[in-house]
Image (cartoon, rainbow, N blue to C red):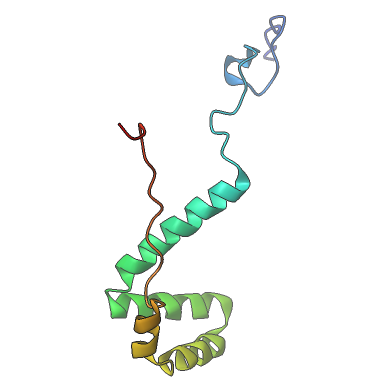
Length: 109
């Protein structure tokens, strides 16, 4: 029968080496709102890349439809989207995602 070694003072189970260093603060302190905005921006950039490949988009939509059993809903939404006036959308700037936010690093000199 194996016996567990005694714990050191200040140690807690489930920590690396089970030692309490007092440094268990999160490294990334980004807010949930900023995290969601960043995820949305990343998703937009991926969409821009794959939309240049129509077959990939079709396969992706078919896979999502099969997985969720929503083929009819996807087809209905595709028909609606195909019926939009593409020239009007382009004229309004609604055919592209907004530009990425730009940040000034180091300030103006």
